[in-house]
Image (cartoon, rainbow, N blue to C red; front, side, top):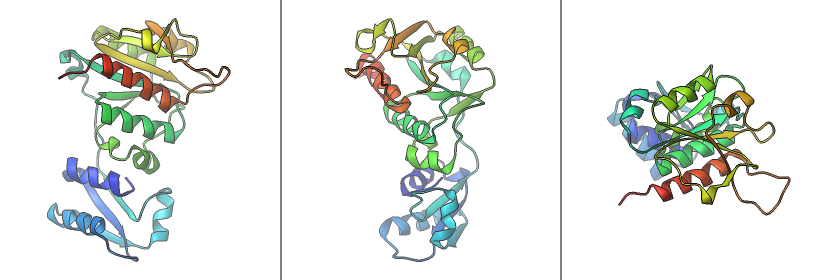
Length: 236
């Protein structure tokens, strides 16, 4: 994980799963820097001081702070049986790490239960993804599957309704009455949803746009659909 927000959230949520923290060795020491150093001492997490240039291989936007996380959140499939209201995001061959990170952040903030991806042609959980997720990587499990259509079949057996987001959907997003347990499938901007995954979708949903011939990027489409789902399923 890189960046102040990501490291701070990792310390807040799962300090016992952090193996090491790296901090810049030069430059001013501000309150955020001191807080992380103090928390590392409290939780007995090893701290290494490094020159800023040594952070560059981790990705841009590191802000001179990084941590090594020993494990990431996992999706509890058994718990999905018990949930009355649940939403998962299915990213079908989304290779852009910025899209994955942005979806993770929105999924965390809105309360989604996880993200499903295929093993191939998918962005991996890199420091850059964690930075963009800005804390979301500590909360949202990314469940990777060799056979994504089979995973969708298993979700159906758990009571999930599968919605595919695409430009020519049978209903507009604002007209759909979402089921209580939902998996939203988002395809790549270039290829869309694969045929094998389309075969598992119960309904296709479009998102209104005035400009034809273009499309929303994956993270924006997922965010709009997440927002509408939680608007319909908001709790007091």
